[in-house]
Picture (spheres, rainbow, N blue to C red):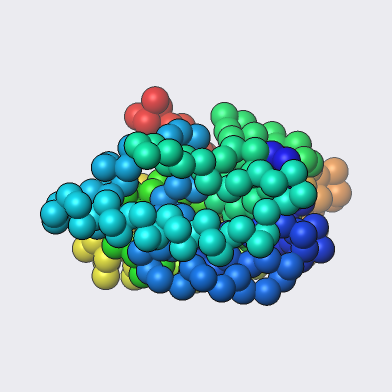
Length: 329
Protein backbone atom coordinates (compact mmCIF):
# COMPACT_ATOMS: atom_id res chain seq x y z
CA UNK A 1 0.00 0.00 0.00
CA UNK A 2 1.40 3.49 -0.84
CA UNK A 3 1.54 6.35 1.61
CA UNK A 4 -1.90 6.90 3.11
CA UNK A 5 -3.06 10.50 2.85
CA UNK A 6 -5.97 10.91 5.20
CA UNK A 7 -8.56 13.64 5.46
CA UNK A 8 -6.85 15.23 8.46
CA UNK A 9 -6.61 15.04 12.20
CA UNK A 10 -10.37 14.60 12.57
CA UNK A 11 -10.18 11.20 10.85
CA UNK A 12 -6.67 10.36 12.00
CA UNK A 13 -7.57 8.04 14.91
CA UNK A 14 -10.13 6.00 12.96
CA UNK A 15 -8.45 5.73 9.59
CA UNK A 16 -5.00 4.69 10.84
CA UNK A 17 -5.87 2.10 13.45
CA UNK A 18 -4.27 -0.72 11.46
CA UNK A 19 -1.21 1.13 10.21
CA UNK A 20 1.95 2.60 11.66
CA UNK A 21 1.74 6.33 12.31
CA UNK A 22 4.87 8.43 12.62
CA UNK A 23 4.55 11.99 13.90
CA UNK A 24 7.58 14.17 13.27
CA UNK A 25 6.05 17.58 14.01
CA UNK A 26 6.73 18.52 17.61
CA UNK A 27 7.81 15.61 19.79
CA UNK A 28 8.70 12.42 17.92
CA UNK A 29 5.95 9.81 18.23
CA UNK A 30 5.38 6.45 16.59
CA UNK A 31 2.05 4.73 17.13
CA UNK A 32 0.44 1.45 16.19
CA UNK A 33 -3.26 0.75 16.76
CA UNK A 34 -3.41 4.00 18.69
CA UNK A 35 -0.72 3.03 21.22
CA UNK A 36 2.91 4.12 21.55
CA UNK A 37 5.21 1.66 19.79
CA UNK A 38 8.07 0.39 21.98
CA UNK A 39 11.65 -0.13 20.84
CA UNK A 40 12.42 3.24 19.23
CA UNK A 41 12.97 5.34 22.34
CA UNK A 42 16.65 6.13 21.71
CA UNK A 43 17.27 9.63 20.40
CA UNK A 44 19.63 8.52 17.64
CA UNK A 45 17.31 5.71 16.60
CA UNK A 46 14.48 8.22 16.28
CA UNK A 47 16.72 10.59 14.30
CA UNK A 48 17.68 7.79 11.94
CA UNK A 49 14.06 6.86 11.22
CA UNK A 50 13.10 10.54 10.88
CA UNK A 51 15.96 11.18 8.46
CA UNK A 52 14.95 8.23 6.26
CA UNK A 53 11.33 9.41 6.26
CA UNK A 54 12.05 13.07 5.55
CA UNK A 55 14.32 12.04 2.65
CA UNK A 56 12.12 9.08 1.72
CA UNK A 57 12.38 9.56 -2.04
CA UNK A 58 15.98 8.34 -2.34
CA UNK A 59 18.46 5.74 -1.14
CA UNK A 60 21.25 6.67 1.30
CA UNK A 61 24.81 5.38 1.43
CA UNK A 62 25.54 3.86 4.82
CA UNK A 63 28.75 5.84 5.21
CA UNK A 64 26.94 9.12 4.58
CA UNK A 65 24.17 8.18 7.00
CA UNK A 66 26.66 7.25 9.71
CA UNK A 67 28.65 10.46 9.28
CA UNK A 68 25.53 12.66 9.16
CA UNK A 69 24.01 11.25 12.34
CA UNK A 70 27.07 10.35 14.41
CA UNK A 71 29.63 12.88 13.23
CA UNK A 72 33.14 12.39 11.93
CA UNK A 73 34.41 10.05 14.61
CA UNK A 74 36.06 6.71 13.82
CA UNK A 75 34.36 5.22 10.76
CA UNK A 76 34.10 1.68 12.11
CA UNK A 77 32.44 2.98 15.26
CA UNK A 78 29.85 5.11 13.43
CA UNK A 79 28.95 2.22 11.13
CA UNK A 80 28.45 0.04 14.21
CA UNK A 81 26.09 2.65 15.69
CA UNK A 82 24.20 2.72 12.40
CA UNK A 83 23.81 -1.07 12.29
CA UNK A 84 22.50 -1.08 15.85
CA UNK A 85 20.01 1.71 15.18
CA UNK A 86 18.77 0.03 11.99
CA UNK A 87 18.31 -3.25 13.87
CA UNK A 88 16.30 -1.46 16.56
CA UNK A 89 14.04 0.18 13.97
CA UNK A 90 13.45 -3.03 12.03
CA UNK A 91 12.84 -5.06 15.20
CA UNK A 92 10.32 -2.53 16.51
CA UNK A 93 8.44 -2.33 13.21
CA UNK A 94 8.46 -6.06 12.42
CA UNK A 95 5.25 -6.93 14.39
CA UNK A 96 3.42 -4.16 12.52
CA UNK A 97 4.25 -5.29 9.00
CA UNK A 98 1.11 -5.52 6.87
CA UNK A 99 -0.29 -8.78 5.54
CA UNK A 100 1.65 -8.36 2.30
CA UNK A 101 4.88 -8.56 4.39
CA UNK A 102 6.20 -5.28 2.97
CA UNK A 103 9.28 -4.26 4.93
CA UNK A 104 9.32 -0.55 5.91
CA UNK A 105 13.06 -0.32 5.26
CA UNK A 106 15.10 -1.65 2.35
CA UNK A 107 18.73 -2.22 3.33
CA UNK A 108 21.77 -3.89 1.79
CA UNK A 109 25.45 -3.78 2.82
CA UNK A 110 25.94 -0.34 1.25
CA UNK A 111 22.56 1.40 0.98
CA UNK A 112 19.48 2.10 3.10
CA UNK A 113 16.13 3.47 1.95
CA UNK A 114 12.59 3.76 3.23
CA UNK A 115 10.33 1.45 1.26
CA UNK A 116 7.97 3.73 -0.76
CA UNK A 117 5.23 1.07 -0.84
CA UNK A 118 5.18 0.56 2.92
CA UNK A 119 1.82 0.96 4.66
CA UNK A 120 2.96 3.78 6.91
CA UNK A 121 1.18 7.07 7.74
CA UNK A 122 3.45 10.09 8.04
CA UNK A 123 2.35 13.57 9.11
CA UNK A 124 5.11 15.28 7.10
CA UNK A 125 4.10 13.38 3.95
CA UNK A 126 0.48 14.51 4.20
CA UNK A 127 1.57 18.05 5.04
CA UNK A 128 3.84 18.28 1.97
CA UNK A 129 1.21 16.72 -0.27
CA UNK A 130 -1.39 19.33 0.75
CA UNK A 131 1.12 22.12 0.14
CA UNK A 132 2.08 20.78 -3.29
CA UNK A 133 -1.54 20.36 -4.38
CA UNK A 134 -2.24 24.09 -3.87
CA UNK A 135 1.16 25.52 -4.78
CA UNK A 136 0.97 28.36 -7.28
CA UNK A 137 -2.69 29.11 -6.50
CA UNK A 138 -3.64 32.49 -5.06
CA UNK A 139 -5.24 32.21 -1.65
CA UNK A 140 -8.40 34.06 -2.68
CA UNK A 141 -8.87 31.63 -5.59
CA UNK A 142 -8.52 28.37 -3.67
CA UNK A 143 -11.25 25.81 -4.33
CA UNK A 144 -13.07 23.98 -1.56
CA UNK A 145 -10.80 20.92 -1.78
CA UNK A 146 -7.67 23.03 -1.35
CA UNK A 147 -9.10 25.04 1.54
CA UNK A 148 -10.11 21.83 3.31
CA UNK A 149 -6.73 20.20 2.64
CA UNK A 150 -4.73 23.20 3.84
CA UNK A 151 -6.82 23.73 6.96
CA UNK A 152 -6.33 20.10 7.94
CA UNK A 153 -2.64 20.17 7.07
CA UNK A 154 -1.92 23.15 9.34
CA UNK A 155 -3.62 21.26 12.18
CA UNK A 156 -1.00 18.53 11.76
CA UNK A 157 1.73 21.07 12.50
CA UNK A 158 1.87 20.41 16.27
CA UNK A 159 5.26 22.09 16.50
CA UNK A 160 8.51 22.42 14.57
CA UNK A 161 10.10 19.33 13.08
CA UNK A 162 11.65 17.04 15.73
CA UNK A 163 11.74 19.53 18.57
CA UNK A 164 14.90 18.99 20.58
CA UNK A 165 17.01 17.83 17.62
CA UNK A 166 19.74 20.26 16.54
CA UNK A 167 21.48 18.33 13.78
CA UNK A 168 22.30 20.48 10.76
CA UNK A 169 20.05 18.47 8.43
CA UNK A 170 17.15 18.80 10.87
CA UNK A 171 17.57 22.56 11.31
CA UNK A 172 17.51 22.98 7.52
CA UNK A 173 14.37 20.86 7.11
CA UNK A 174 12.73 22.48 10.12
CA UNK A 175 13.06 25.90 8.52
CA UNK A 176 11.82 24.62 5.16
CA UNK A 177 8.70 23.05 6.68
CA UNK A 178 8.04 26.07 8.88
CA UNK A 179 8.12 28.30 5.78
CA UNK A 180 5.63 25.96 4.12
CA UNK A 181 3.42 26.17 7.21
CA UNK A 182 3.46 29.97 7.17
CA UNK A 183 2.75 30.00 3.42
CA UNK A 184 -0.28 27.76 3.95
CA UNK A 185 -1.58 30.06 6.66
CA UNK A 186 -1.05 33.05 4.36
CA UNK A 187 -3.18 31.39 1.66
CA UNK A 188 -5.91 30.56 4.15
CA UNK A 189 -5.96 34.15 5.44
CA UNK A 190 -6.30 35.45 1.87
CA UNK A 191 -9.20 33.07 1.32
CA UNK A 192 -10.84 34.27 4.54
CA UNK A 193 -10.45 37.91 3.48
CA UNK A 194 -12.06 37.14 0.13
CA UNK A 195 -14.97 35.24 1.71
CA UNK A 196 -15.62 37.36 4.82
CA UNK A 197 -14.53 34.59 7.20
CA UNK A 198 -13.08 37.14 9.58
CA UNK A 199 -12.99 35.12 12.79
CA UNK A 200 -11.34 32.12 11.13
CA UNK A 201 -8.83 34.36 9.36
CA UNK A 202 -7.87 36.07 12.61
CA UNK A 203 -7.18 32.65 14.14
CA UNK A 204 -4.81 31.77 11.31
CA UNK A 205 -3.07 35.14 11.63
CA UNK A 206 -2.53 34.61 15.36
CA UNK A 207 -0.78 31.33 14.54
CA UNK A 208 1.64 33.18 12.27
CA UNK A 209 2.42 35.81 14.90
CA UNK A 210 3.37 33.08 17.37
CA UNK A 211 6.32 32.39 15.08
CA UNK A 212 7.06 35.96 14.01
CA UNK A 213 5.40 38.68 16.07
CA UNK A 214 6.90 41.42 13.87
CA UNK A 215 5.48 40.07 10.58
CA UNK A 216 4.09 43.32 9.26
CA UNK A 217 2.02 41.83 6.45
CA UNK A 218 0.14 39.65 8.93
CA UNK A 219 -0.61 42.60 11.20
CA UNK A 220 -2.05 44.49 8.22
CA UNK A 221 -4.26 41.56 7.33
CA UNK A 222 -5.51 41.38 10.90
CA UNK A 223 -6.32 45.10 10.73
CA UNK A 224 -8.38 44.45 7.60
CA UNK A 225 -10.10 41.42 9.10
CA UNK A 226 -11.08 43.34 12.23
CA UNK A 227 -12.36 46.20 10.09
CA UNK A 228 -14.34 43.84 7.84
CA UNK A 229 -15.89 42.37 10.98
CA UNK A 230 -17.03 45.87 11.97
CA UNK A 231 -14.51 46.23 14.80
CA UNK A 232 -12.58 49.38 13.94
CA UNK A 233 -11.30 49.73 17.51
CA UNK A 234 -9.56 46.34 17.40
CA UNK A 235 -8.19 47.15 13.94
CA UNK A 236 -6.50 50.28 15.31
CA UNK A 237 -5.29 48.41 18.38
CA UNK A 238 -3.69 45.89 16.05
CA UNK A 239 -1.72 48.73 14.47
CA UNK A 240 -0.49 49.68 17.95
CA UNK A 241 0.64 46.07 18.45
CA UNK A 242 2.47 46.23 15.12
CA UNK A 243 4.23 49.44 16.16
CA UNK A 244 5.35 47.89 19.43
CA UNK A 245 6.52 44.62 17.84
CA UNK A 246 8.58 46.40 15.17
CA UNK A 247 10.14 48.72 17.74
CA UNK A 248 11.05 45.92 20.16
CA UNK A 249 12.13 43.34 17.58
CA UNK A 250 13.74 45.43 14.84
CA UNK A 251 13.86 49.02 16.10
CA UNK A 252 12.01 50.28 13.01
CA UNK A 253 8.69 52.00 12.37
CA UNK A 254 5.75 50.60 10.36
CA UNK A 255 5.95 50.92 6.60
CA UNK A 256 4.10 53.56 4.63
CA UNK A 257 1.60 50.93 3.52
CA UNK A 258 0.74 50.10 7.15
CA UNK A 259 0.43 53.78 8.09
CA UNK A 260 -1.84 54.34 5.08
CA UNK A 261 -4.09 51.45 6.10
CA UNK A 262 -4.29 52.87 9.63
CA UNK A 263 -5.32 56.26 8.25
CA UNK A 264 -7.94 54.67 6.01
CA UNK A 265 -9.38 52.78 8.99
CA UNK A 266 -9.45 55.99 11.04
CA UNK A 267 -11.31 57.69 8.20
CA UNK A 268 -13.64 54.69 7.85
CA UNK A 269 -12.59 54.50 4.20
CA UNK A 270 -11.18 51.01 3.62
CA UNK A 271 -12.31 49.44 0.34
CA UNK A 272 -14.64 46.52 0.92
CA UNK A 273 -15.21 47.50 4.54
CA UNK A 274 -18.37 46.88 6.50
CA UNK A 275 -19.64 50.39 5.73
CA UNK A 276 -18.66 50.58 2.07
CA UNK A 277 -22.11 49.61 0.83
CA UNK A 278 -20.97 49.55 -2.78
CA UNK A 279 -21.40 52.90 -4.50
CA UNK A 280 -24.35 54.01 -2.37
CA UNK A 281 -23.99 57.31 -0.52
CA UNK A 282 -24.50 57.32 3.25
CA UNK A 283 -26.24 60.20 4.97
CA UNK A 284 -25.57 60.87 8.61
CA UNK A 285 -28.39 61.80 11.02
CA UNK A 286 -29.37 65.43 10.43
CA UNK A 287 -27.65 65.60 7.03
CA UNK A 288 -29.82 66.97 4.20
CA UNK A 289 -30.65 64.43 1.51
CA UNK A 290 -30.29 65.84 -2.04
CA UNK A 291 -33.64 66.89 -3.42
CA UNK A 292 -35.07 67.87 -0.05
CA UNK A 293 -35.63 71.59 0.69
CA UNK A 294 -32.99 73.37 2.77
CA UNK A 295 -34.55 74.71 5.96
CA UNK A 296 -31.32 75.97 7.60
CA UNK A 297 -28.74 77.59 5.26
CA UNK A 298 -26.05 77.66 7.96
CA UNK A 299 -26.53 73.98 8.80
CA UNK A 300 -26.49 73.16 5.09
CA UNK A 301 -23.25 75.11 4.62
CA UNK A 302 -21.66 73.27 7.56
CA UNK A 303 -22.63 69.90 6.11
CA UNK A 304 -21.28 70.91 2.71
CA UNK A 305 -17.96 71.87 4.30
CA UNK A 306 -17.77 68.57 6.20
CA UNK A 307 -18.59 66.60 3.05
CA UNK A 308 -15.94 68.46 1.06
CA UNK A 309 -13.32 67.87 3.76
CA UNK A 310 -14.16 64.17 3.92
CA UNK A 311 -14.00 63.90 0.13
CA UNK A 312 -10.61 65.64 0.02
CA UNK A 313 -9.27 63.27 2.70
CA UNK A 314 -10.52 60.23 0.79
CA UNK A 315 -9.00 61.49 -2.48
CA UNK A 316 -5.66 62.08 -0.72
CA UNK A 317 -5.67 58.58 0.75
CA UNK A 318 -6.49 57.00 -2.59
CA UNK A 319 -3.78 59.00 -4.36
CA UNK A 320 -1.25 57.89 -1.73
CA UNK A 321 -2.32 54.28 -2.23
CA UNK A 322 -1.89 54.57 -6.01
CA UNK A 323 1.54 56.21 -5.65
CA UNK A 324 2.64 53.52 -3.22
CA UNK A 325 1.47 50.77 -5.59
CA UNK A 326 3.35 52.37 -8.48
CA UNK A 327 6.59 52.58 -6.50
CA UNK A 328 6.38 48.87 -5.62
CA UNK A 329 5.88 47.70 -9.23
